[in-house]
Amino acid sequence: MSDRISSAQVTAVANLARLRLSESELEQFTAQLGDILDHANDMAQLDLEGVEPTSHPFDLNNVLREDVDRPSLDRDEVLAGAPRAEANMFHVPPVMGEYT
Image (cartoon, rainbow, N blue to C red; front, side, top):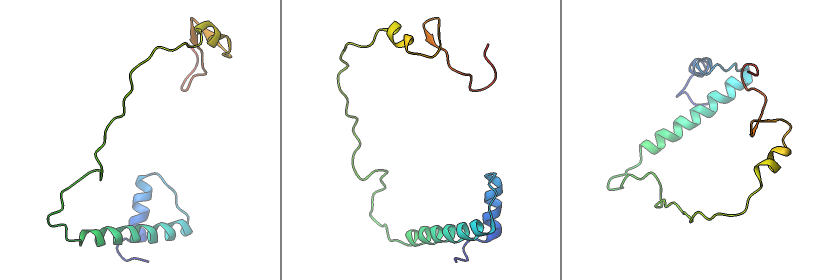
């Protein structure tokens, strides 16, 4: 187990994230977070003189295609298959609250 982070620190972070950890989880996460911090420390020791900062190793290019009209399903046909439709729209159960 690494001494770079304590169980108390892991508990404090877990509380901030509203997580309840068992003793075994606390031990496991303390070790794992210690390993992560050790790895970050190892990377901080690297000599990066002359290395250009990058966010991606390769250039990113959007691959775009031309919009092409294609036949699609008729609106009435689609809505006919819905469990509930109203005013040419799908009527779905509310995520929060009640139906209006």
